[in-house]
Image (cartoon, rainbow, N blue to C red; front, side, top):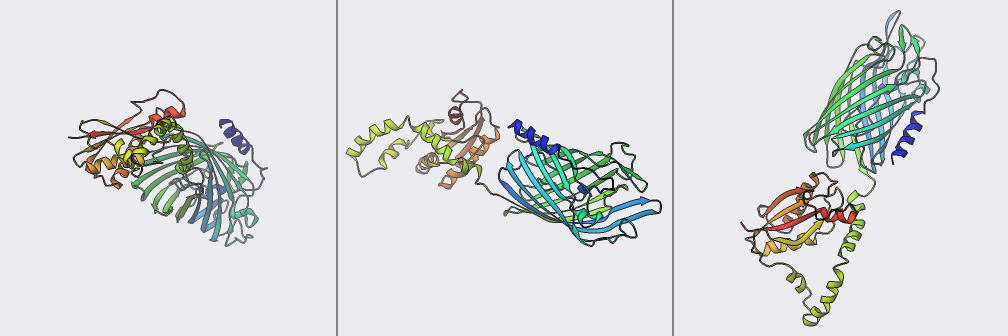
Length: 456
């Protein structure tokens, strides 16, 4: 797996086309993110869900996006621009996403590069290909890191020189980030490969920069608020080249809907006189996504059932021995054995019931609720009893999964007529394993929920 990541990254890193001597616009600054991480132009470091496909449509108005300084003063190459960024993305696997974005210029006006220019009113910008390789994600997404090898193609140049670069551009970046329940943060460190050139009174060369974003989940699953800071400077003369040094500050909001459609809006302000940095820009749009693969729990469902059957194979011969005797005595009453297996009136506080529920790794999906339904039957027949759910994980899981499993089991009990105030929860995690082995059957035994009678 690690070797595949290194090979893919190396191939894309070496992909850079021949650079032209003519002046080239930094097309990367006319963009929105093809990923729905909650940020607009800052890339997140956490990989997307496997099989996730999405589409972003974001309207972007920029005021004075290209202004250059020459011997005759400032020239507003583009004074106003209204664009629609259309982005597609697909997560091939958990650690590899691929984004494709194309800015469609709906309207623009300005002076052009010179008096002989006839500025195009509309067209397309530079096509961007954005692969993201996640290198690692630790401590339940608390720390993660990705490599992003962004490439742009000179599609805008085919229409007008002010619509994009006249060459392929390459921009490798490192994305660091953290995700928590209420706050996400991301940091991008990038290197921009540009040709050495002089335009008007300004010199251009390779540059490096950073982008920082903070995303706050103001209302869980409904409203996010984000803020971003961008800065870039020339490699040759850091923070001394007015044509390249730039700072942008801004942010926006993201409204989430149950239909996997997010509504996005916000604004940015530019500082300094760098080429291709607007004085300000306003954006608004929608982001939609869906998973083209079945949910992970559903994909593991059959595998889980097979493992469960294997675990029950040892008990099967005993059940077959008992069946002939029971059929001979009471053939019509098939439910009798099940009722006999259920304790009708447990009297001892803390008594452990024989029923257990087991789970897949890092999952709270309940493949078969029959054991929970048996416990619910006990409680509905004995109204003075309460139950305590004790939730466990294996040693490789985060303790948070124990809480999720307990909540899932509690929901099934309530669905089967048990009052919520009769259910208590105790989170144990990996502290009390029943098996010390490292094989999957051993881990399945440890990933469990147990039931204890509470009479007080």
